[in-house]
Image (tube, rainbow, N blue to C red; front, side, top):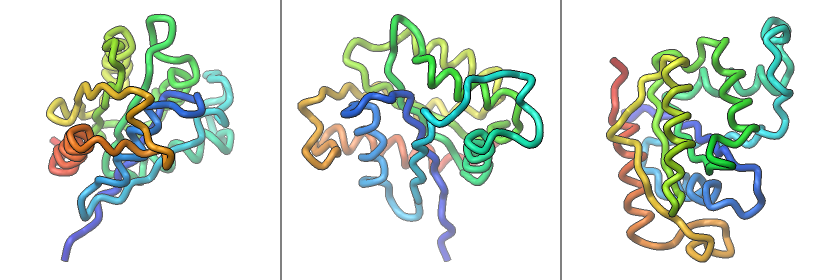
Amino acid sequence: MTTTFQLLTICGSTRSGSTNAAVLRTVAAVAPDPVVVDDYDGLTDLPHFDPDDDREPLPPAVADLRGRVKEADAVLFCTPEYAGALPGSFKNLLDWSVGAEAMYRKPVAWINASFSGAKNAYASLGIVLGYLNVDLVEAACAHIPVTRDMVGQDGLIHDDEVRRRIAAVVTALAAHRPR
């Protein structure tokens, strides 16, 4: 009997038509069995992080985020770079995660969909993930450039090579066993 592998995907973009969101929708389309994808879409619902509010009862959006992270077997991020750094709303999500143990030692990976590289965003993401004490699965982290014209009317990427590379990320993350 195969047990499911719960993968939580989190997009760092709030833009309609985001290529990062298209990458994560495509994750759900190409994920092999037994991977079940939960796409987190509450980024704009999170209140601005305030350490004084990081206590019970948590704001409902924060409780939802932490509960979904806790239930997931792994987390996969895909974020753009804004003004040379992580987008503020995405950094806010990460800030809400620092005070919780939900991501502690959780297998985590990222897909960088930027053609320009977004090196600053991913360098910063690496620093923050270090503070979260995640189990960063390097074999599942990938730079897979995606342009808007690669995204179909259905919001998915249909380029065979890009889909193959996305599927390889998901497979590597699902195959990883926590240390």
